[in-house]
Image (cartoon, rainbow, N blue to C red; front, top):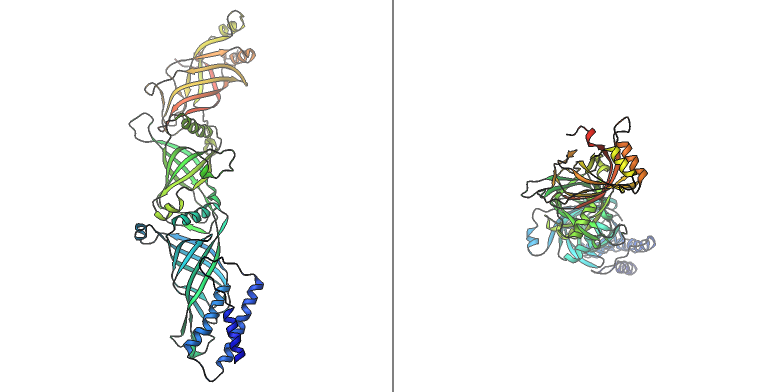
Length: 543
């Protein structure tokens, strides 16, 4: 008996305990085997102890034998988290009113335990949650079934109450940006072993309290590895501008962008509701060593997600964000905004940063505000094709023989001063005001002229309705044809001459600066107008 008692005492002392805040190390297979051996010895000693005639009361035996036995099993197993579902509780405002946050969690877990010899349940508990040694909240759980041991899958349901917002925001950043991270759980819990009808290995009189035994004071200390979202891999669709009722010319327009994200994290994010997002240019592009939050350039749009927004795991469906262009009237900001539109109109992807401003859900507002995600806005033709020129055709008022004779006469100079009409298109779905134009005329790669439209006020501006194609200006504008590249200029004049002498049309490129107003902003659009057709006005059918 003495040897058995000593063996039992040794086994009880071998069970590790972990205090709050202590680091938790994952046991190796070797150390796990060393820790199992004393428990097996404990069971042998317990059997010898029970065979003696004089026995302590069953309740004392259950505590003396049951607690170390259960503690050993709880301490040894590794808990793996497969999925965490977050959804809003029925009420969270009582917590919010006192500076705390609350959200419901449903955690899918799997584990491999030693056999209890009975059906076990982890009773309701208050579990402290720590991130990198700092506590951020409490998980109030409902009873969690553990089965009889072996490999099991189960669920832990409860409510997360956050009372340390600064630490909570750190773990929120880890969820968004990191590949994986670790969260520590600590509590002192009660384990319930259901009695003889469920296969209890103890004698009948030891499980006679309604067929079950409650083992209080069991230390529950676990480290769980969770997957992060790795920036969510944001993908953007085509940008669209739509007119809204306004009291000023080309007032605010509705901006809408389709987007989808990939969520490889452990988390399913329900009840995100409405997220407010500011869209910035990427100030560090093309060098992206700096984090997105430190690379915010010029804000040019404010958008919101749709109501009832949520994100599951994997790639999401396309969803839409809508808002307004929002550009300060500073020249630098206007230039940067124009760069976004220039890239868009020339079918080049534009690096942007989406910065989360807030959410209609206080829990997610605290978690996500300030989070910045990189994305690329695709060029216009990447999604739906078509010409993105604003200048599409030019009609020159010119006498070809007189022009050629003048250019070949060394006494007449090297510049021809003429007039032309232009046909303009609007690649946007919102009204476009053209307030000025300067363009270098290129033919076969050579400079052959210069076009200039005077600066116009909004009252004088050329107004192009949404998606207008080929609006002919009512007035003629000056064009200068330069003979610095005389062979190229003569070839241009030959091509625009009517058939059979020429082709009747030539195609030029314009390196253009277009002063515009659209959606309440006034960008200077600087991009090449490709394959602009040039014809003689008198042979075009125009009056």
